[in-house]
Length: 311
Image (cartoon, rainbow, N blue to C red):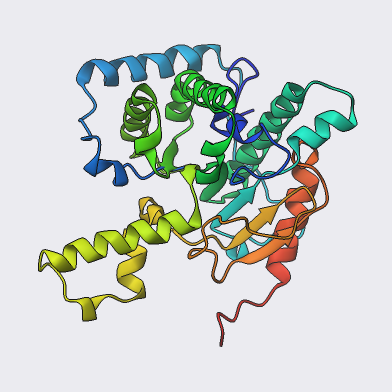
């Protein structure tokens, strides 16, 4: 197991589980580059670095298992696996209501599902997983709900940072982080700094994010560079725009495969530029019911598709 039950996976993700529809109204690396103009990114102090390292050792001692690379399931071919998978995790509240359970039970079940998918990505060699945790539109939700989500997010990162260090997992958070509580902004900066050299797997959490926001902020950055004489307007092309998108935090910025649970057939303003050539896979199962069998089904379907990129 990658995440022991005593170390619940980022309620960054739990944040998303406060609704039946993707939190974007839907669903990790808030590029703090966008925060550069708002909050200076301080270096990780030696005290914090020591604390993180120490926490990793302590939690490692209590952690009963590691994520071991395993033989791929029958039918999966390593050379045709997606390098980057994106997830819109929909259906947590519906899952709970169908079982006459508190809505919180749906969030908890959703966290368990995400924990399992992260494990499988590590085991099977998928390099990047992006999840839509909290959208720009979610700020219009009731204040008490937003505050709860921010609190869950902060607590989850504090609890799990040692595991990310131990398991060689890089954490990135994308979105308009300037809107987040200051303490959470600082925690994100430190967690990203502490895991930036981890290479096994990258978990990208989209918070306070939307596809529209991402493209607009990229254009604003390019406009400022042109105004300052750093580039000519005629220099602006798709490549320059991609370099300013939030997903510049990863080696593989464009998802190869998007999976959405919950029976909806839309991308809900998630990574609109980056999903231009992604293969889309929609499932009826609610997110808490999505596990290894359905993830495998999505990957097998992906491997059967011919990707022509318009050619």
